[in-house]
Amino acid sequence: MVSFAWKAARTAAAACETGRAVCGCGAVKGPVVPWNGEQGRIAALNFVSLRFCAFFVAAVFVYYVLPRRARQPWLLACSCFFYMCWNPAYIVLILFSAFSTYLCGRALAVLGAPAAGNRGRRRAAMAVSLAANLGILFFFKYYNFFAQSANGLLAARGFPAVPLLGVLLPVGISFYTFQAIGYTVDVYRGSVSAEQRFWRYLLFISFFPQLVAGPIERSGNILPQLQLPARFSYERAKSGLVLMLWGYIQKMVVADRLALLADTVYAQGGALGGWATAAATVLFCFELYCDFSSYTDIARGAARILGVELMENFRSPFLSQSVAEFWRNWHISLSSFFRDYLYIPLGGSRRGLARTCVNTMVVFLCSGLWHGAAWTFVAWGLLHGLYLGCGRLTLPLRKRLYTALRVPHGCLPARLWRTAWTFALVAFSMIFFRAGGMDAALSMVRSLLRPGAFPGREAVLAWGMDGPDLLLSAVCVAAVVLCDVLRRRWGSLSARLLQKPLAVQWAVLLAGVLTVAIFGMYGEGYVEKPFIYFQF
Image 1: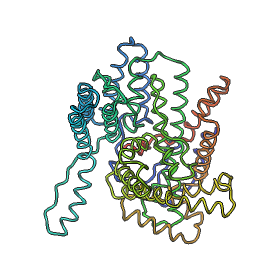
Image 2: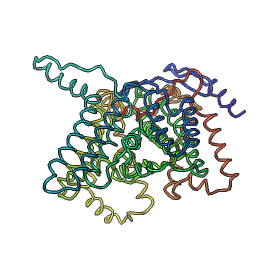
Image 3: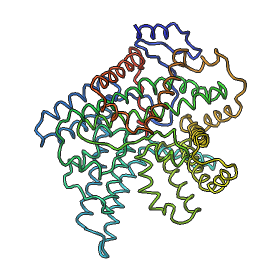
Image 4: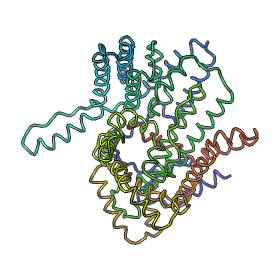
C-alpha cells in the first residue's frame, strides 16, 4: 500500500516544463547533460543491474565450492570476464599494465637493495615501467585534450592542426594504472616484496569489486590477503551484505534522485537563475558523495564476502572543518596516493611555506587532471590548491581573530561556522567539476552571483523535480548528514548494527530492502545511470 500510494502520488504530480517522463516502478527519466568524459554508456555488469547480482551470486557460490587452491584462479577468471563485459579489447591494457609492472618488480628484486653499483639500473627499471604506464594513460585519456588545446594556438598562427584520435576512454584506466604504479614505487622503496606469481599480481590489479572505480588499493594491503584464500564466514558475509545494501540505498534512492534536479539545471547553463544554480550545486555535492561512496561500499561489501578487506574511502567528508580535513576524508585512496607518491617526494611541507604552497598546487593540478581531461577539472583542482594555500597563509590571522573575539576554537558555533564555510568552498568548486565546459561553468557562476528574487513554486518545479521528489530529496540529504554525524560519534554503523539482537538486524535489513524497492530509481523505461566515477 505504501508503494502504491507513493507511486500514485508521483504519477499524479504534474510533469515539469523540462518534459520529464514518469516511468513505472518509481523511476523518473530526466534530461541528461553531457559530461567531460565518456558518457551515456551502460556497463554490461553495472553494480546496480540484475546482471551483476546474478554474476556475483554465481561467482561467490563457485568460489566457496571450489578447492582452496582453485579459488584465486577462479577470482582472476571472474575479474577478467567482468572487465571484458565492458569492452573485450581493453583487457589487453590491463594485461600490459600488469605485465610491465610485474616485470619491473621482478627486475628490482633481482637487482636487490639499493647500492652504489645498482642504483642507476634500479632507477632505469622503474622509469621504464612508469613511462610505459603513464604513456598508455596519456594516450587514451589526455592526447585529444592536449591536441585540441594545441590546435587552438596553431590555428591562430596559421599552422596545420594536430590530428585527433577516435578512441574511447577505457573504463577504470586511471584507477588500475595508479594501483600498478603504486606497486612499482613500493617495490622500489623496499616497503613491499616483489610478487613472484604473475597470476596473483594480475588478480591484485584486476580484482573486480574495485577494478572500475576503486578504491585505489595498496599492494601491501591486498597482496598478503591473496596469499591464502579465506574460508567462508557467515559473520563476514552478513557484514558485507549490510555494506552492499547501504551502497544500493545511497545510489538508487539518494544519488540517482538528486541527479534529476542537478542534471536539469546544469543542462540549462545558468538560465534558470542563481537560486536554481545554488540548489543544483548543493544537491550535486550530495549526489556525487552518495554516488561514489555507494560504489565504494558495494565494492567493499562484495570483497568482504570474498574474504578481502578493502580500504575505507570516505569518512563523513562534509562534516570537515577545513578543506585540508575534507581531503583527509574524501576519496582517501586517491588523496593518500598523491600524498605518498607525489607531495612527499616533492618535499611536502619540509622546505618552507612557499615551497609547501607550490607543492600543494602541483598535487591538486595533477588531481584535477586525473579526474578528467578538461579545463574545468584543471580549474577545480587549482581552486582546491588555492584553498589549501590560503588556509596555510591565513592560519595565524585566524588564530589571532579567535583570541581577539574570545571565541573558544572548539565551541559549537565555531565548529558549525567552519563546517558551513568549508562546505560552501567545496560546493563552489563543484560547479567546475559538474559543468560541461568552462563557458557553462562561468555562466553558472555568474547566475550564482546574481540570484534575483526567490522563486515561486512553479519556477521550482521547472528545475527537474516534482513535489514528492523534492520532499524525498530533502529527507535523503538530512538522512545522509545524520548518518555521517552518527558515524563520527559511534564509528561504523554497520558494525554497531551487527552487535544488536538478530531480530533488530533483520528488521533493519528488511527496512533497507523495502526502501530500495519503494523509493529506488529503477523500472521499465529507466536507463541504468552509470556511477559518476566510471568516467575517470
